[in-house]
Image (cartoon, rainbow, N blue to C red; front, side, top):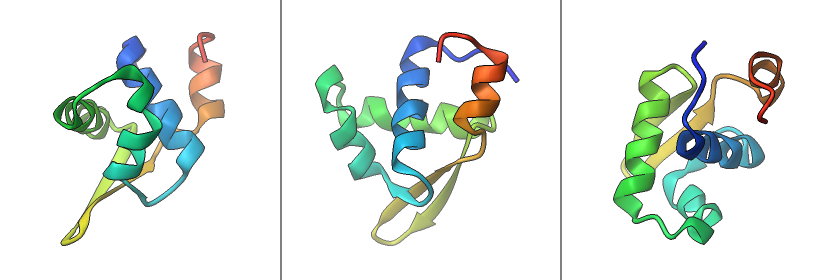
Length: 81
């Protein structure tokens, strides 16, 4: 497991709070206080999937994201959470 940059950490925190099968639009809404463009959120989600922290299910209505690493697992690794 690698330590996540602060921006990706904020995205995975939103995903932990939302749970499995979360639509990207719901994550964009949760993260709206950061002022990130939808493409930015998508980029962070793509990075989390590539790093093995989340999975994505492609559907016609949009992508659904599920955390693969729990908050507790990450907390044991990194004390910032």
